[in-house]
Image (cartoon, rainbow, N blue to C red; front, side, top):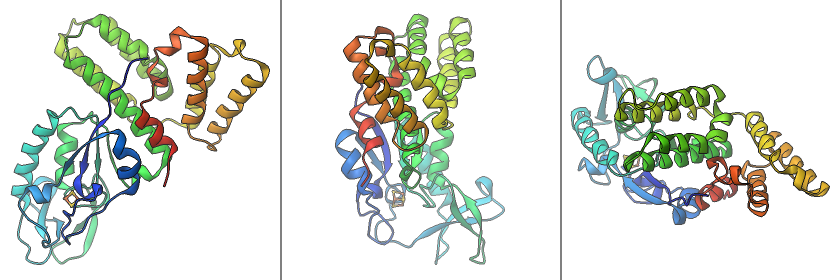
Length: 322
Ligand code: SF4
């Protein structure tokens, strides 16, 4: 199996315990800091501190007006000082820096008018809530880097979403590495073959469509091919697959070697896959057992499959909860 580098993850700085919030505090997330922290490389950013607002500072909020991107303004809650243009210009510059930072994913702070990726409260001029939207920095980040896996810490409370986020980051890391160096169509075909099982879990139709794209070679130009493949691949894995779909793939994997297992071991594996399908254990449980058998039995085809290749961070992120 290919060696995986530690995941490099951008993050809202307050989630790491940095005292950068408007009230001088932080929003340290114990799970991210204590469980994931030792296994990944963080790239923290606090847009409001980078704007020079300091701490403590007046809280800010999104206000719906009839001008600005989507009619939204970012303004100080009490003095109504308008920070829209400053944040807009900063975010555009900062996402260019982040685009060059080799990130594999990004974790944003839920609900923040700067960092929130969804469900951020929007107010009207009279100070009444009028809906939900996306923080201004998050909007710039998600528009500029549409393929980058992004989540917020609240959504990551869900263990299945964590598994999904890890799948996306690992795939993105491998894609990024492939296209960063000199690559050939043959190398891309090998990447596609190594991700067969992952794509079959997320979208069998996308697996076939991407295969046709690779088979067409670089007739559209290498840069276009790389862009199209990356975009279509990350779109294919962007929607969480059901446990049932993953269980089908796990059963198919087991079919490659289960005839070599004793009755008890076969039963142990099929039971674990079934427990996963019923939501009783994380996917890491049957995956870990499968990886063990694949290694013991030296199943060559499977040992090259990215679906089975889990970094330590991936395993921890899926298993451990505080
Ligand atoms: S949510 Fe974003 S802007 Fe607000 S304190 Fe955290 S990192 Fe800074």
